[in-house]
Image 1 (cartoon, rainbow, N blue to C red):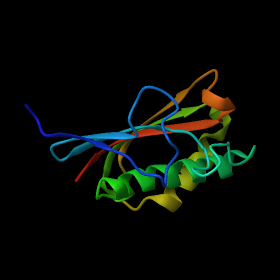
Image 2: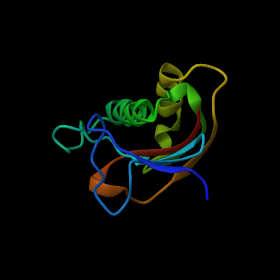
Image 3: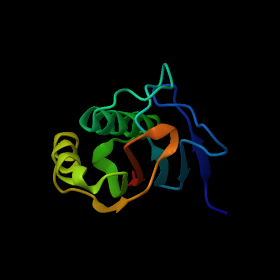
Image 4: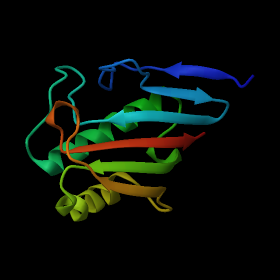
Length: 127
């Protein structure tokens, strides 16, 4: 049986459903999707896409740190955007948050996200 631990931090939004912020199995951490919620208020930070994307990466960073890692340890990212017209913006903001080599990534257009968010990201991290 693999070594499995639930990762939880108050520096990222609390789960709003029946899931964990992340689950660590041996040296791999599976991070649940983060939307742009302020961890203190549990409200969307802004109507602006760039502000939302930055908050998503801040939330992911907080969960990574709770698992003794960082954004630099992420090997796979999945993005969900309600408007693929924001793809260039998310690329620019990702370049601010990550150093090369960048993780593998997928970007998916979706009809809607929880709480009316414009952007969500989930990740896999190896530490």
